[in-house]
Length: 156
Image 1 (cartoon, rainbow, N blue to C red):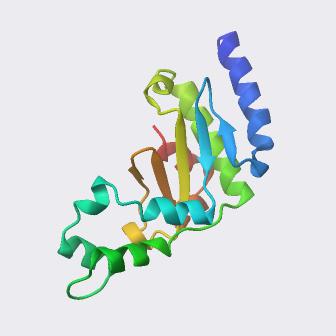
Image 2 (cartoon, helix red, strand yellow):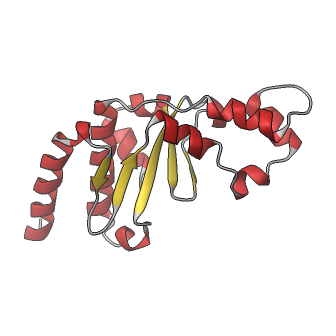
């Protein structure tokens, strides 16, 4: 293993061990991952972006698991309730997964936005799947209960 890669790996290991208290975590050069608060999660879940504005009435009803028409306001209120608080172990596992991704695919750093919001949700808003919207990655609680190898696989 090249010396630079070994040094980075050791640095990442030390940082991941201390990560449980982080809200913002530096990731490589000029990149930061942010573990959102519940309040910020609610804000990002209900952000009226392209994704939300392009949902059809059928989309909103099926995602909210309700019959009939559901207004955008009702839908957003249902979505808002899905934000959760991060557990320190979840933070450490995700930081480790991001760091491994940076080592495996070094060029990915140039493709990432400067800040990435990591949002923990119940998963009910999107059929328990992880997904992205703009600079936000939404992780359903169930995906965070998986072994580290599965979390590593979630990130390229």
